Image 1 (cartoon, rainbow, N blue to C red):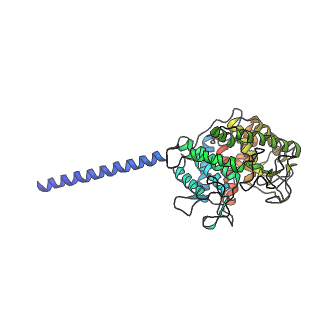
Image 2 (cartoon, rainbow, N blue to C red):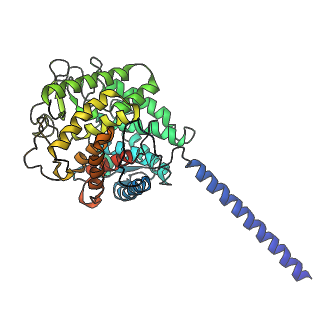
Length: 420
């Protein structure tokens, strides 16, 4: 009897221990699930503006599957652990630099939009955020130093405007996706950053976009701009946060500038150059080797993003100025390629001619044309071909820039992009 009693006591003891363990485990898991709870999980199947289109030769399920499959590859290759345990960064992949703010912005946007499918998205996003915060610009703790080299050392402490804008937008998305009551107040972070961008990266006289915070009012390039920094859908989200009218001015002035550039310098193709000079007085394409290459005044590796950025404004907000602009580009690219995506070159003159020697596939050109095709049903066969062509390329054959733009644009084209 004594032995039986002892066995019952021991059994009850271990049952109690087991119950407590299960209870604690369930509470822990619950806390983790709550911490990672998402309000707009992928896939979202967002309804863009009436009249816009998506690829219709494959099912929505297939669009989602292709997008999520590429995301798995993209994340495995480009998200790297930072020099501190709570940080991570987007690998630049080319010699000389470890990370650039442009890539950090891409990565943060991609990660927050893929939350829900990616159960660890919040952890990754917070790591990317912590890395951004650990590398402040000299002008403001809310802006990011544009590049880091080996061992996470800042190349310098100036900024790249486009990187800051994408990071700020990603924080608005994060506030919508995960709320603001966790360890990071994403909305406050976005507000601080948007205000800093306006202060340090927007021309206070013309309300146009500066190349970086290093451009001062007496700089020779104070009235110059990089076309791919014009992100009107971002600016409308920024305006909804600050509500001071300034981002409306930037949007309106930039659309007006782009309209002038199209009509005066690219009336047939509707293309915009990488960099625009003297926006306050007779705006025009910059000279060769202005900043990056002999093709700085052409439709090259910066301006290739313009169709994506502008078309996104139409898809989310229905801005007629955006549609007018990309309609012209869509008409030209379909005509010059004879409706065959394989004929898309990696760069063009503003007259719409191929840059000599650029007869190869570049996803950073192909993917934005895919987004811009979405604005009108007349592009449906062209859009279907572009989707198949874009998704047919393997990640291993391209670099961080091509693959990251492809990833973002696949999210948009599959119908899974949304405004905060």
